[in-house]
Length: 635
Image (cartoon, rainbow, N blue to C red; front, side):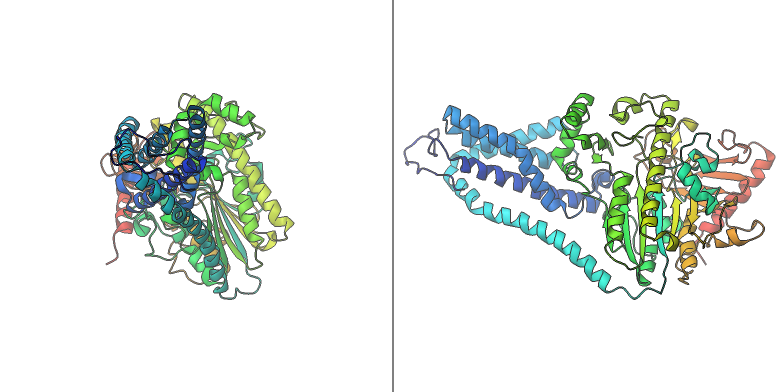
């Protein structure tokens, strides 16, 4: 790919060309590949670095794994290709040797803009102006030392190409080898060991499910599963957003214990201070696999990968890798979020563009649907005959409340194209509810599809299925939308169903409030792991075996840390919150705004605080003391 360079006489002017014309197309191709690969490698290093140190709240936007070291250069090669083709055509038409120098300026402009815009500390215009200045300096330097720099490009390009190939192959092969090695080290599982599948439907409110009395038939399949198992009518999440709730699901502990209240400096949320449920399964000879639709906050790099032999989160598709690069996000921001462009691309045979949805103020993601999560999990299950623990996160009920293109609608009238961008913020509360219910219907179908596949494989009778959620969503109640903002019942009341033919009682409904932190100990208890000290929240089995309600059952605790980056009307923006749910009351305490107390039996929407009543003051004082005692460190 060497560019033919002509020696420049000592007395020639600086404006005289140092390159024969017409230049070989391979010369422009060499410059294209060199700049694209360097751009991508530095970008990948920056993404990994900022994610690790969580600089300026970086970890709340774009997440990546080591695969980015070959994904970013590859996508930059693709994105720089049209410019290269244009330069080749222009060069052949104009027969002007300055095209080489112009190409250096343009490629340098793309490279520097990528690096400057990557940390999101500069507005786009400022990043572009500064990049243009640096590209100008590069252009002038290249003009003065053209032959030398062209030789440098030619000599280093093979090493850059080799680096990307070695990184890509090494990352993929090492992941395969690590999983194979981990499987070979598993102890032998007990004979007839029960498989376990935990399905977490992200953002699913219990009060929108048919089995929980919702007036719309959103979830007939989940209702049928509940009839064949145990349903907890008042299951309470440990928080109102994904990260701390998933930490509780896997550690069997509350947030004040496991400490995963937000992404910490270093890019980790769940540390190794306590064992995880996945580790317990591996110690008992189980294959362990996690399959995440929410790779914003349930991902391996945040600490959730511990104990899982296999974890599928990022880079589930080519387009997902594309939106994790700087230019992928820029194209999404400028073009792909426009309804007309999305519609055109769909008509051109790219229906997956409709799955491109915002994941933050300046980040985008290609949503992985429940059907894809099912497919990944089932493919992994089929690889080996050993018993398995599968942990799945469905992200479909999460905003922006869209179902896959072509999915038949039961309730929704909003379009699936651009619901979040064009319609969501201006939609009426009723319209949002309709769209939310439509998403529940889709997930309900996918849960049935997954269970049908287990039955087809003959695995259903020896598989324990747990269906739950990490939190709910606000639909305008208390003037709030979404989650991560408060601890009202709409945010923490989640479904919880246990199902296994011939092992789980049929048609049992438990009214006692119970925490999702108890799922780990319950599963361990059912399988006879005998490690109750590792998962201290009490097993729920006594609640479905007791003849009478257990009055002394621990009240579920919920927490949310101070999250200063939340919206201005979010209580969590101004301080941490804690709540406690009893069979009658829901007590909420905000460290800045004080307490609220609701009788959720009589007032399920929690519209009227009882703190002004004598009864409420007495109850609130007792519950505040209970929280203090429970959260105090042991003496």
